[in-house]
Image 1 (cartoon, rainbow, N blue to C red):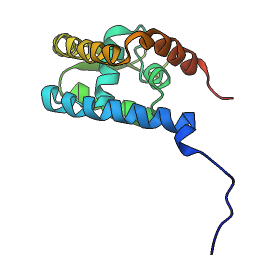
Image 2: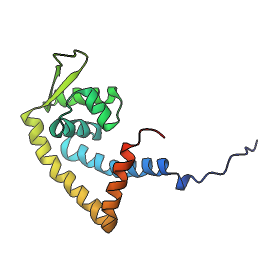
Image 3: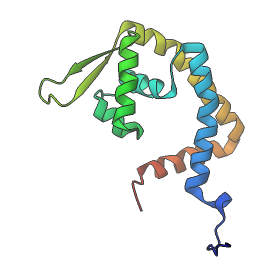
Image 4: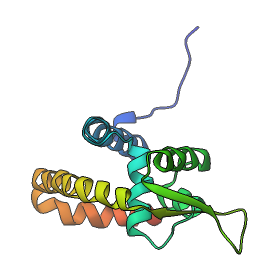
Length: 147
């Protein structure tokens, strides 16, 4: 059976291209995080948000990094088991799980952040003069929730 499909250029479809580009960039970085530091990309996202954001609940991180609550919760549990964060129930809203960086978590971030900054510098060098415009475009895209 032959289907009649509407004309569609997948290689020009922006949501698809963004997803593929993000996966390609994250894949190599994820492997290095795992090998060098023993953590996953999701754990890195949780850890860096705990260290560098005022938003320190699982729910806050879930919204900030657009991850399912279950993924953030599992990553937080693994980070807690490794001694990098402390989980606690929020005193005013018992549904919220607060996360706090431990000294070991801060030490790990002190190792990871220079590595991440070097990766960023390589991306910046690869894009050259287009990097600032790319950053501006990403910021605008991240503000769009739905069209």
